Image (cartoon, rainbow, N blue to C red; front, side, top):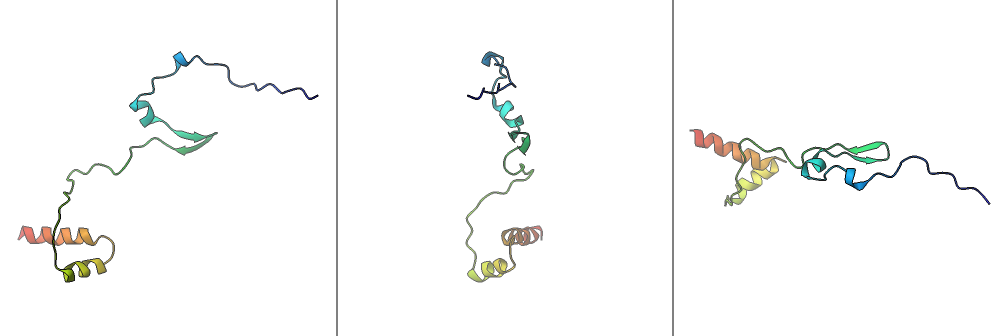
Length: 89
C-alpha cells in the first residue's frame, strides 16, 4: 500500500486573526487563480463625470433622427453638440 504524501504547506490559521471583511477590503482585493492575477481591484463602472448628462424624453422629426443615426455611433452626442451650438447663438 502506498504511503500518503504529507500535504505540507499551510498551517492552521485562527479565524479570529483574519482581517475584517468590510467594503474597503473588497474594493482593494485582487482576484487570483493560483499565482495568476485575474483582476486588480478597481472602481466599478464608468468614472463620475464632472458635468453629468440628464436623461430626457424628446420628440424629434423622423427625418432628423434618421439623418443623425445614419452618421453612425455617437449620433446622440452629435445631436447634443448641435443643440449646444444653437443655444449659444
